[in-house]
Image 1 (cartoon, rainbow, N blue to C red):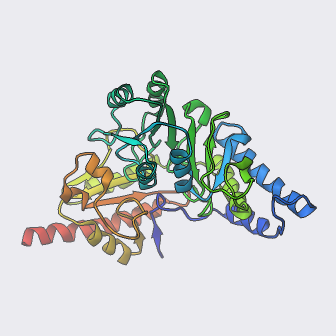
Image 2: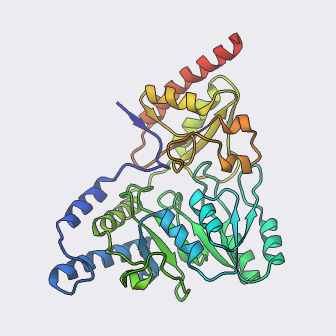
Image 3: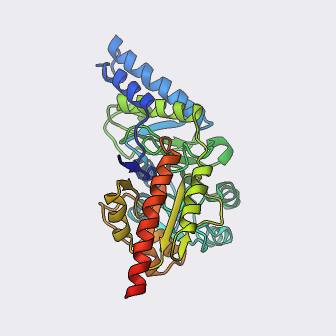
Length: 371
């Protein structure tokens, strides 16, 4: 039996989402058509928009359905009128690369050794540049789980008439995410991180903020995103959001149990961002001298799926820009393993991980001693 502990890469689809998608696939209408079939498709989309907006503490017209979190982040950074960008050093590659492709001046905001952004540095950066800035800071990091002080970011940005985009892809479904309370101008979310289907997400846009479409060629999504809507994906997204709202798991006990297993093993284990507020489902750690690719293969042979960090590197195990920004050494970054829990995770899953880890760590320590 396989044990899946890579929910930050993607979470298994919830039964509620699968059922909603199958029902939506029975519809044959295009939501832009005026006949009965089209009206039924449109109604399904708007119910989904209402439910997701409610879960995010906003109103339905602020929700733009997209093809996923990366598209949402790209639209936020490339389609809002701004003179310059400020992005944190630990952002997801979709934000960093969208910023680089924007043609605007880009300032990179550093983080401390715990993976939390430098608020004074943000104030300094916004005070030095010319023109209106767009700041992009994620709510929680996808590799370490470190939660960022978004409301403080918004307060500092407000002093400088700057806009704020927040990538909440990893946080949504694991932490309370309220667009209104956060006070940001733009927010990106994705379905598959919380048990919905892959290939669908949303960009939340503050009412009245002009945002150009990233994809043109049609009037869908109030002319903010062209293309026939992914009706089944949107239905599954909304169903997953509803299920997460009703059955939100408390991951903290499992997280604590997992970290206790790491601490009880052999060798010098570092837990990244372990002393700051983190996602309750995420543990990123390293055992000195045990390279990630070796550990990943050993876990996989034991039937356990974990990862070495972000899942957006074409399957390559490579040094994490997040850990490097935190000041970790090259040797440590090469050893980083990410374990991420989700809606389907159980105590038995953590126990199986613990048993496997004890064997892997013991073999590594024995080999190091014999060398």
